[in-house]
Length: 216
Length: 66
Image 1: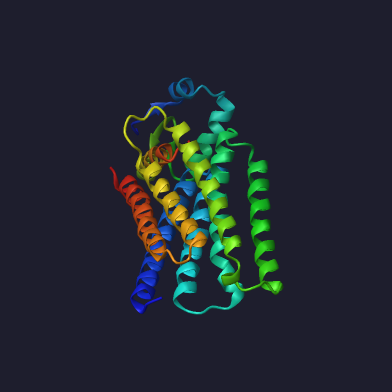
Image 2: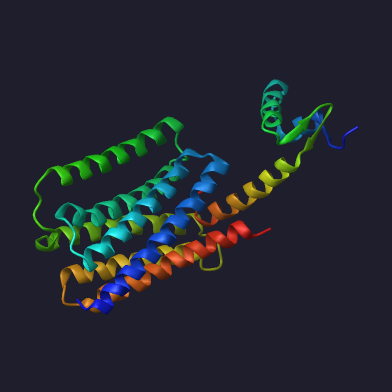
């Protein structure tokens, strides 16, 4: 990989992480204003995605220890899982505070167990595990599909195309492009395209949130 | 005498029993969101909170989360 592409990945990775953390902080502001338990899944999900973007781009720009090479995949999937869980709990009528905390606690414990398992075991190098990456991408696409489906159900009365749906659609295209790249690593343009689409999706969501909070 | 709404009027609007309404009002008074006396009035902090709350609800509606 050329150094120009390395710089591009580092830049888009950093930009994506900043945008994801911005979205997480604004969603945390929403949660702290309304205090509905299931909303905590959004700041948690976007924070995990922010971390995964940093590790993903770092892993392709500089050589990282094997354990850290697994981080972007695990963190990314758990990030999308938290977002999908938020919609799932909302569909259950918000559920009771107790069950919401139970669901998120189980997810958080699973995430910690996964991290401990990866750091404690001698897993093979991620480069020899293309099929594992494919599984992670497919899982992410399933979560994103559920999010977009839930959004469309919730916004079916809206006449205009929602910026939120557009943002999540871009994130799905990002995952699909990365899936194509995992299937055929020679297809570098797919990786390049994924970076741009991901930044575009996050910009749409971040701008929508910032505008929403600035509105008088 | 401060401007504001009568408690009975608010009670009718929110459709809550008097004892439960008074609990909520005391809590909002402690938080500095309202002035709780013979009549009820929003404080500046209360008005800011209502404005912020409306923005958040509008955003969350677009996210399909409320």
